[in-house]
Amino acid sequence: MAVRAVRGAVQLERDEAGHMDEQVSELLTAILERNGLTADELISIWFTATPDLRSDFPAAAARKLGIVDVPLICAQELDIEGAMPRVVRVLAHIESDLPRAEIAHVYLGAAGALRKDIAQ
Image (cartoon, rainbow, N blue to C red):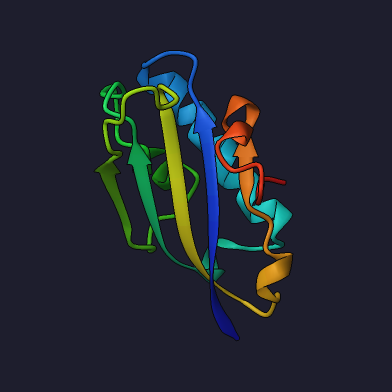
């Protein structure tokens, strides 16, 4: 079993805790489903959020999904002029037999423009 990394992102419509929970949950669920993963195959997850998101920690959505024994961390994304606003990004480390080229990176909605090279 190899250690792999899965990327993903979602742009929120507004900075509200309930909306963040809904959108991050959708992103994490899509990452798990598209890669045929269970929570047991997660090693750790890094979340970043743009500086305009202050209503909640993105990791709280993972805990509500039942991802309770996986190390999670949240950080603030760089505040770059002209960057897409209200974005939560995910970098999940996983155990998987999938070759690197078959990992499904998930960019939902407008966040697909962030990484057109790997978004699926």
